[in-house]
Image 1 (tube, rainbow, N blue to C red):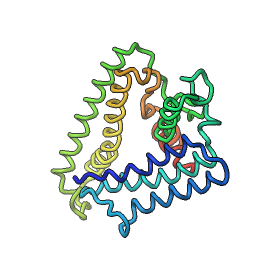
Image 2 (image 1 turned 90 degrees about the horizontal axis):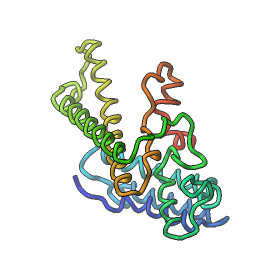
Image 3 (image 1 turned 90 degrees about the vertical axis):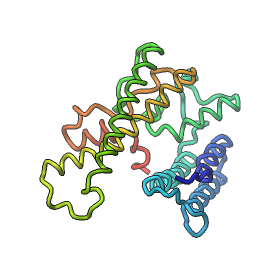
Image 4 (image 1 turned 45 degrees about the vertical axis):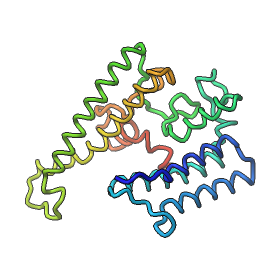
Length: 244
């Protein structure tokens, strides 16, 4: 897989613009400039966005478009430096010290659920209350478990002809059901594994407290209707993007 360092430019640009907190009409110009940069990143006629792996290209492209949408929301409507409050700062706006302010602003576009902020979304799973060491140990085990599930799912896809063939009509309903679970599970397991790895790392070095890392997905027992599945189990990470 080829490395593409330029795909991180939109996020870096957004973070710098949020720290500068431009006033009208510069906030609109900043959002438009960020969108233009995102267009250049994903436009094949300007910069070729190709890692050699299809789903990674899709992930980078989706993230770049989401960054452009975040730019309009955060620069024009959100105004994190003046409107958002963070519980880590005593429920006041972000730090006045520039490097702490920059760290807070970095967290805003990367926290789609706004954990710990005044605009935190609803139906977040309960925050972890265990001590730091217990949280690190438990989260490490959970990360390892999701890695095992993800790799098992990848092996299933790799050796399953249905995932590489256009003709799948000959399979029974049970096999179709298993294929669907594996297909959805790959994303679910991968996101959980990465989430708990980041949780372990940030808590271990003292960057965040365990309470800032509630489960990334809600409980599956709450997903007995489409509305509850979308609102309590899976929807939280997509709430801001789908609203935009």
